[in-house]
Image 1: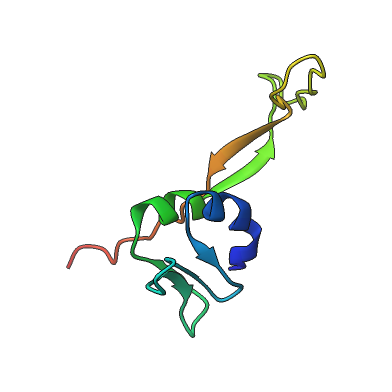
Image 2: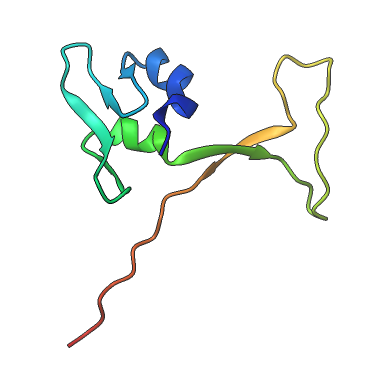
Length: 92
């Protein structure tokens, strides 16, 4: 995972972001990638930011929504939760 993709949002919330990890200003590591490529996180706010992704908004028919230039908000983009679902090992 590249934490720099979420740098603006994380720094807005007071976190320090590098390519390898997310830390507090005091240096406490809050999120990083383990040697196997899996992301781990110990802070719920950081986890919430890292598991959302900006995607194009769609209508009920599946067409893209265009931006209305007369409004300050960009209606063409929305956020989507991308939390990975872990499978259970099953019953024994």
